[in-house]
Image 1 (cartoon, rainbow, N blue to C red):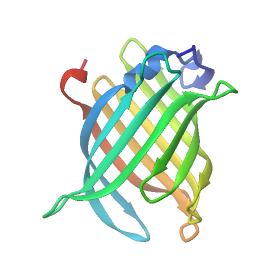
Image 2 (cartoon, one colour):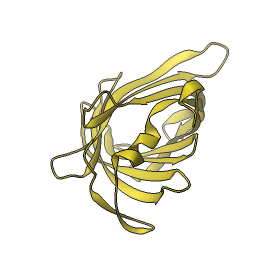
Image 3 (cartoon, rainbow, N blue to C red):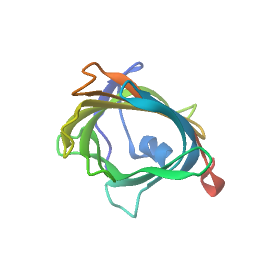
Length: 177
């Protein structure tokens, strides 16, 4: 991966590097909860894996989620990439098991290399194959072996940006630092 774009965050202007994005790499698992004005609240368990293969200038990820309850029911599956686009902006792209596809642009919130901390907010730039979604926002925060994330969205029935998902995952097995 080439050096990343210069991004402005809490600590001023910094250049995001391959080593910074390497904090994402590995397997993560944990639990979360979801709610939205148009759905019943729910709890879930999740596995999320980020992997860079060889010298490819991107990181692939796979996210699998199961609803918690008497029976563990598969709920959500998505696959996508983190990459620097032609304009040297950080980008997340994905497709989801329900058919939705998204392209989001990253904004650095926090980077503290000494304490292995990285926080990035992704703003939805393009969404396809789901007319309900008007806007999406994803925030990832990593500190050592803990990844916290949230998803907010606005829909045709709930026009204001509203929290939908939040989860706390930990790095598993050999991927722990």
